[in-house]
Each structure stands twice: as structure tokens, then as C-alpha cells.
Length: 503
Image 1 (tube, rainbow, N blue to C red):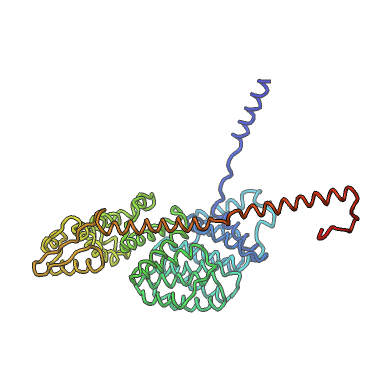
Image 2 (tube, helix red, strand yellow):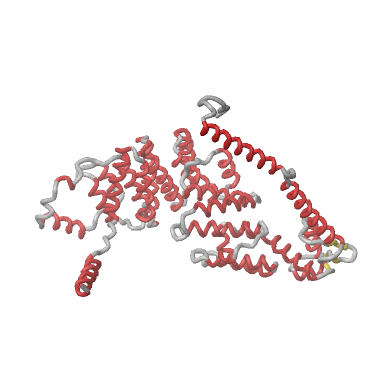
């Protein structure tokens, strides 16, 4: 028995060694599978298959090159297809080495000659496949500065062809096309020129109730407005349009981020904080979209500081955010300590990064928060301090500025005290201790509340005295009556229909 079991175990180990993981498909095979899914989605009226193809677009576009696109087009279109020639015209011709290899492989072996005739397509695939190929080519042209102008031309031609076809089954791919169009114009430095086209397309999508395209175009317009700091026009667009409720989470994340930026510039920090939280929750995972995750958190940290809160320290230790938020961590430390000199030094040191992130104007507003924090610390340390000393400790320009800032802090309730203008100092309010009439009144109110709550609870739990005994007596009488009726029935004193009452 032991020998047999050992042999079986070794056989299982050998079988596990022979089992190998299947190799992932090549980009050309993946594109071919996606074309088949698109064709199936159109024939079966299943839009979920098209969305499934588009979900793999982000990973696929990083793996494509000229050869992959040429091979995929050759495999999915017949030899004399006009659509195939149009698509290949946007790609550079194959080098001579590849052409000679193709000739050798087709003429030198008999294996390829014996392929079944079904391996080569005999007709063009659905028009959605052509738009999908154009989408891949546009993203591929974004990888080089020399092809930015070419991507703009291809984007224009694709939009015209897409609008001429006017197929509702093309709506999910059209939403991705508009993103690629915007990216082409942005890389080419002509983003403002695309705005009229986006506005016209957004009106058309709204009339056709095309939610995917409408959500994409609203985000494209908001991005264009915010790129040129046109916050008023962006706010008007938000007020005049309704974002589709059926939009995907990535589109909602972009929309909430744009709203957060608009509200932050308009000093509505509470609404900005809420929208940025929604953007973080709806955004993809940090490792999937690290760029967007970092951009949202940069603005989120500044908005929290403007609201008077200090962000959680663990946020700056996140592996995706640690390096990107290093400059913002220095700002948080300066605001927390209330050191105006440290804040100014940090601001000057990282000014270029803040301007690139478009958060410089918001960070400049934090100067008042730093001053308020410093004044609060001084009020806790001194019962009386001159305005000149405040000016020196907070590195203010003059005593008049110090008097104005201190007066505003007293009015806003940041500190308790008063300014003695004749003598040039600030008298801070005495700190409240745990004794005195105010503390006893507070405790008296709390004790009274607890006693009232206890009395109301006792009243709610009271019942009439001996009420349960009446119920017990009634139940006992009913049981005795049932026993008597049963006894009379057994003795035969009652007929079948006599004396049963309600039974």
C-alpha cells in the first residue's frame, strides 16, 4: 500500500509540472477578438459586448505599434478593400525586411497554402469595426510629437465619417472617439479650436438622448474651459446642462473633479470638498489611474486646509501619493505650526510645481489661515502682547496690518480678547478653567437633562396595578368553561348543533 500511494503522488506532481499556464494573446490576436465581439454586439443588439471591448482599450493602446496595427487590419479586411487601404494610409509603410519575410513565408511553405479559405475574410466587417480601428490609430499617433498634426486630421475625418453614418450602435465607441479628438487637439496646442465642434456635438447628443456621448462631451468642454481658466463659462455650462445619471463611474469622477475645481475657485469650499470626495470614491484604483488619483488628492489637500482642517498624515504615506504630495506635505506642516516665514519659504521653493498643478492661487489664500493659527498660539501663550511683538513674531509688514488681522480674528471668534489701541497691545481673554459659575451652570443643565430623561423613562414603563390579574382570571374562566363543555359532550347531554355558540 505505501508503495502504491507514493507512485500516485509522483504521478500527480508530474502532471502538475506538465500543466503550463496559457500564454496571453498577442495584441494582434486581441484586436481580432475585439472585432469579433463588436460584430456579435451589432448582430445580437448587445451593447454590453461593445462596452467590454472598450474596457480593454487602456491596456491595449500601450501595446500597439505600427506592425501590430498593420497586421490586424490585414487579418480583418479582404485584400481589395477600400476601407483597408484608407486605414493603412494613416500608417507608415512596412519596411522592406518585413515585406520580404511575408513573401518568403507565403511562397516557400506548403502549410500556408493549405489553409482553409475561411481564414481570410471575404467581406468588410461592420462599420463600427472601422471606427474602432481609427480610434486605435489616433491613440497610436499620440505617442510621437511628429504625428500630432496627423492625429488632428484623422480625428476630423473620423468625426465626419461617424456623423455621416449616424448609427446608434456606434454610440459607445463615439464617446471614446471624442476623448481621443480632445487629446489630439490638446497635444497639438489647439484645444480652443475644438470647442465649437464639441458644443455642436453636445447639443446633438442631448437631443438624441445619447447618454454616453453626452457625458463624455460635457467633460471635454469642462476640461477645455478649465484649461484656459474660464471658470465663469464652466459654471454656466454646469448650470445649463444635466449630467446623465446613467454615465459610467470614470465619467462621473471627471465631472466631480471639474465641479470641485470650480467651487474651490468660487470660495465654496464645502461643496468643493464634497465633489472631490465623490471623485475619489468613483475614480478607478490608484494603480490603474495614478495620474488622476494624484491630481484629485492635490486639490483635496488644499481644500481641506482652506476649510480649516488638517489632512490625515497617512494620506502622505500612500505609495502612489507619497512622492507627488511631498511639496503639499511641507505646506501642511507650515499651516499646522502657524509659521508664516516657513509657509512663504515653502511657497517660493515649490512655486513652479504649484503653478503647473494650477493650485498656486488657492495656496496663496492659505496665508490668512497661517496667520490665524499663529495668532491663536500667541493668545494661548500671552495674556497681554504688544502689536509690535505680534508683527515681529508673525513676520507682518507693519503694526497696522497686525491690528487689522487681530481685530478680524477677534470678530470671527478665532481668539477671545480685545485691542487697546491707545496703548498698542492686545489683551487676551482669560482661559476658562473647570470651576466658577459658568461650569456649575453647565453641570446643572446636564444633571437636569439626565433626571428628566430618567423620569420620562419611568413614566413610560408604568402599568395599571393588578391589570394582569384580570386577564389571568378571564383566561382561567375560559379554560373551566371549555372543560365543562367537553365533559357534557362526552356524557352526551348536548346535541351536535346545540350550545356551541360561536364555535
